Length: 181
Image (cartoon, rainbow, N blue to C red; front, side, top):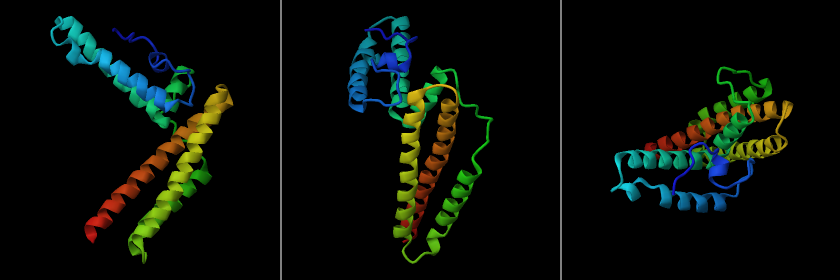
């Protein structure tokens, strides 16, 4: 089976072009596509066919990673709708930036708390709740799909990036605390 490399990721996976994705259908289709495009199936084929198989497998893998991750999926949808995120645009809601500073200060204070693991878990839970709210907002914004709503989606993606960085920092801090014991 040949995979059409010109199809967008949603078409490739036979999914509607929408932020909300049926993750079970996505995973099922991914396994089907992997079975049919895996380069090992073309070991005895010509050099050109092997190269094409590698390209197709890479395309399927990239599409799957993109559609599986809400932030990557939102970025991709924005691109499809002609509104890609400008990486040089660093404008951000001052209230949100203040919240970020407060969360970072809370993380810095974890080591000095009486129960650092409990404190860290509360902070992580707060960040995860904020992340879920942003993903939900992305679903609403990208469900409407035009004008100012796309700008709101871009803003949510930028905020989600901050939240992901903070979650990563909580994991690093937890690992450091564990090693300190």
